[in-house]
Length: 63
Image (cartoon, rainbow, N blue to C red; front, side):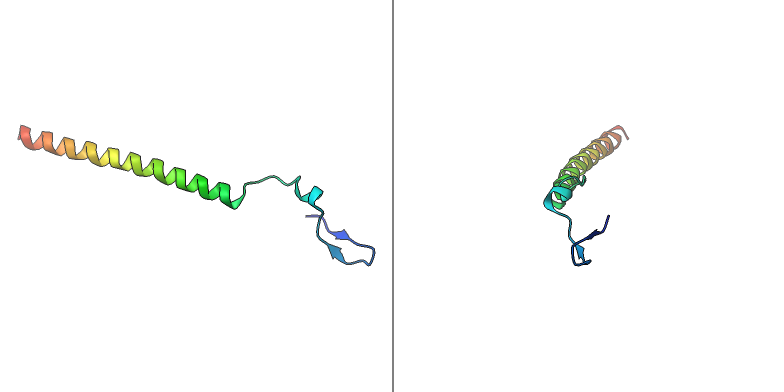
């Protein structure tokens, strides 16, 4: 980040115009992405568990 010196020589915060040019994700966006990812992984995990149980039942019947 560049340092901005005011008239008195002290560092000042960048203006809103300067801040708006920075790119990245907000905390809210990251949290939403984490929640969506968790839901997808949970549904996939439930599918794997259901398939494993069905396979176990099939093997038990065949034995």
